[in-house]
Amino acid sequence: MASESKGLEPDRAARATQARIMKELSELGFALPGSIEVRSTRCGKANCRCKADPAQLHGPYIVWTRKVSQKTVTRVLNADQLEDYRPLLDNAKRLRELVTELQRLTLDVVDRDDRWRSR
Image (cartoon, rainbow, N blue to C red):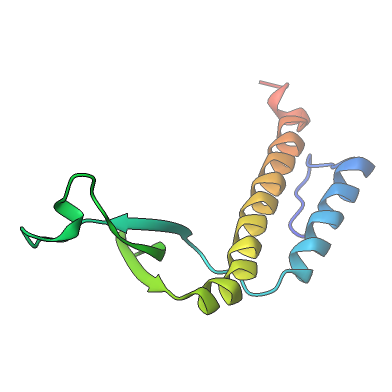
């Protein structure tokens, strides 16, 4: 590991797992945060078809949602944008999975530190 300290001795398997994770991270392309949802909505007009029985909702709308400075930001996408952005969203999901895996691996390495047993 890049910043190994005395007592942190990852075994061969941990090093191999870390190398695999780092290789896959280096091969990821752009990663778009957020999620995609398809929504149908009601409007505010009293006599609109979306208020009828049965209701005929507006849409479907393809919506990309993400957090920016602790606020939800939403954009409506067209079908071409969805097709273009889907691989970027998939990359972001894979990025989160790899970071989680690397963190779990690091916790395992730290848990094996002999200095925890000496207390």
